[in-house]
Length: 267
Image 1 (tube, rainbow, N blue to C red):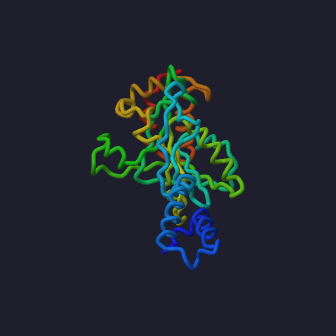
Image 2 (cartoon, rainbow, N blue to C red; image 1 turned 60 degrees about the vertical axis):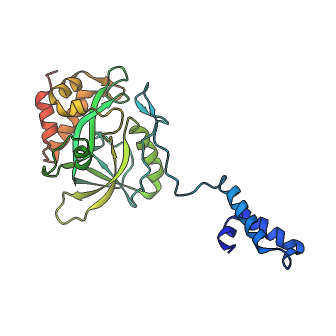
Image 3 (cartoon, rainbow, N blue to C red; image 1 turned 180 degrees about the vertical axis):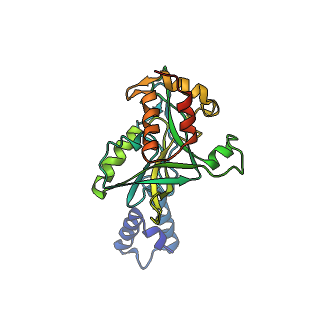
């Protein structure tokens, strides 16, 4: 009966000390059990359960980023680590990697519906950048009709060397602090016959404070915002134009990006 409690180092110490004092033949085992249970209760305060859920991320409204200046989410990181980029990571990864591949993620769409206060805009005048959202999320919010054909997002996958993983993740978590959350998706390489890979992606979900359903539903308004916004990472329109240029380079079409480019006012 004591075995489950002796797994706790404090419990084991207390019980062994008690029995070592010569009480092994006379002690009432009920008292020993009570002692072990009491020690386990004390130990629970210094040894939190591994199954306890992670705290929900908190928002810094003044800066327009997650508190702590890092992306949210605690998903298990794929091994080997592949990163799926669908926005600025397509042309400006800024991290070491050992392999790249163009791939498609089915059931997820790319939308300029994430306001940006830290890269392509400011807290007082947010820009608009891309996020990748699952069809299921949009349907749950009433932003997509059930039964529509699955969305597909083409992006660039990067395989990160094992020694670089901690540094790359730390840098990306900081880069994606403006409302993004870690997710894991399956990516099908564009190269025929290549097997799918599990990849980490940073998604600004519909529940983050900077997600804009208005911009999602009104491409004309989105294009006007993109045309005028500037932030620490540069002009907002440069972001859209660079993504459109990358899609042309890999000979992929994205109807949402193409529509924004048509609506973008001239410089």
